[in-house]
Amino acid sequence: MFVQRYGSLLNRYGIDTVSIPTISASASASASVSDLITSVYTDTVEVDGAETKPKTQGTPKPKPDAKHSYAEFVSLTNDEHSSLVAKYGEPGTQRMIEILDNYKGQNGKKYKSDYRAILNWVVKRYEEENTHSKTSITAKMPKAYAGLYELAAEEGI
Image 1 (cartoon, helix red, strand yellow):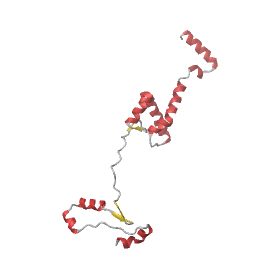
Image 2 (spheres, one colour):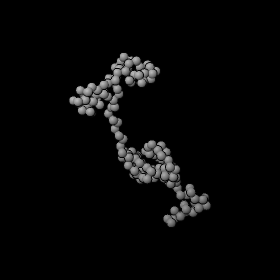
Image 3 (cartoon, helix red, strand yellow):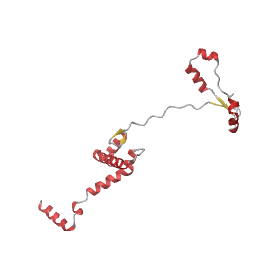
Image 4 (cartoon, one colour):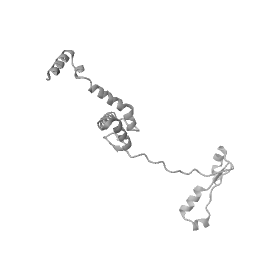
């Protein structure tokens, strides 16, 4: 019946013979249902004269580490967070998480990996922020006031 029903499909793909596993009535009386199912799915299939076993699922892939929420919109694994802390310190890491959190909250942006987003562009923004804050206060003042500020600093005011 199978060959009659799917014969044209089998011919289209060049499959000449198909063997279908059968379950005998005597086997079902002495074996459990799970044994029968296992035997059906582990039998060999003959395709074009060559016997092959059906593909079985291998060992499942290990699940990645669970992500923890470090801000409303930012999630990192413990390893990712500790890597950032090792490179940039705890205050730097917190500031970078805050920068990314604000950006994602404002724009509705989603990333596959927040850690990669931090490494890709948040670090640059954080470093720019730090270089701007470290510039001298006189650079931001008008030239007329810069001299007064320097004089006041010399006087200790």
